[in-house]
Length: 288
Image 1 (cartoon, rainbow, N blue to C red):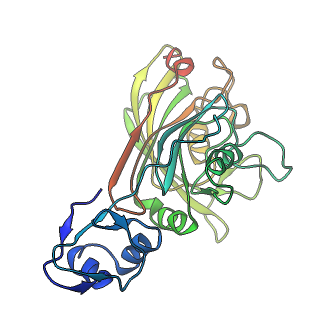
Image 2 (image 1 turned 90 degrees about the vertical axis):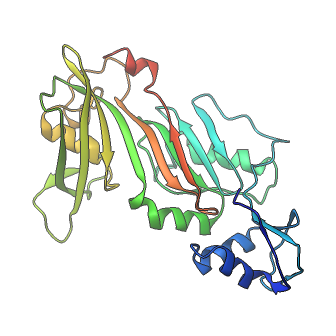
């Protein structure tokens, strides 16, 4: 919730918001109004020209989602945070973000759709970004298309970090991995010389712990290319454990050794800084 402001004289609501929230873009203020986040004396108001009187209290608030009727999420999915704009989910390994072209496979998208429609059948969710089926951890969904667009337009500015267990002992303590990726093939992305059809991928890594034959890494991505972490570590000669398509020879956890551990981003309705962090799952933590 933002700090409350008090009207000192009669005014229309939108001009008052523009004057009293000068750091906010006009389009953002209109979105707040449209989705009922603007409160006058504690009541949601959506009209731009709503007349304010001296002494009126104006605030911005994104309500937490109603907790009445709900559909329990299946095992392997856990809601970390939910409000009227977003859902932050802890996705277990083995869950698709969204259905494949074949339509097969259990999806986080379908489970969350059932969840939000339990309170209103008109509700739905929008996909902001994706995690591979065998990658676990934090993933964000939006509850409206405008909020989805805001998050996607600014996604490159946010802090996204992963924890990874890679094969072998990586000697460098830290570094930056860069390559150009050919994403033409659905099953395996390849690093190739740059041309008009490739996209650059940038990953920063830091070694957290070395075992006898595995390394625990923290990875920060500047770009959100498909399989970029998997390609980068494979090209280093240290593929993720369990990642046979990219050269792994071991699968000690019977899953991919990759976990989305940290997300820091601005809330699409309030611009509040949101930070979510999850530890490495036990089955991976035991390896190192």
